[in-house]
Image (tube, rainbow, N blue to C red):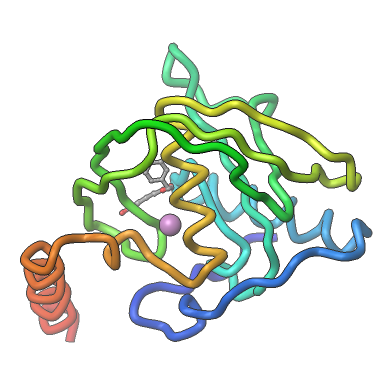
Length: 171
Ligand code: QAP
Ligand code: CO
């Protein structure tokens, strides 16, 4: 089932998410719905809070070399912790909760993450490039933070101005 995606400036997005305790059918339904919703909206990553569920759950499905988004490549990441961080990189990010806005964000270049899969099995993943960026972006959602909150003062002002202008045009 496709769920509604919460967008900025909805306060729900500022909530901190909590760890999953039961790896049950309800969790599996949430994960399945998140995947369906993300694909329907042309996303490559989604956190549970973006569909108003405050749990430490995120999914990532990056396109491969042929630019194809394959469900086999789907990562379902539950209760993640970053155990190593290295380097710095800048990437122009977007977010399904801030549609139509893209801006450069600086993040760690490599990260090592521990998490659980949908069956409650512990996993460890070494992440580089776009995957490292995507996981950090989604993990920020779990802390109630959006990529626009990482921008410099000037870029943030530019964002607020553009967002207000767009809200006006929609009226
Ligand atoms: C997070 O972002 C991310 O504005 C996932 O109109 C960001 O899926 C991962 C999207 C940067 C890696 C690098 C955004 C779709 C999708 C929009 C997304 C839009 C339609 C964003
Ligand atoms: Co996002």
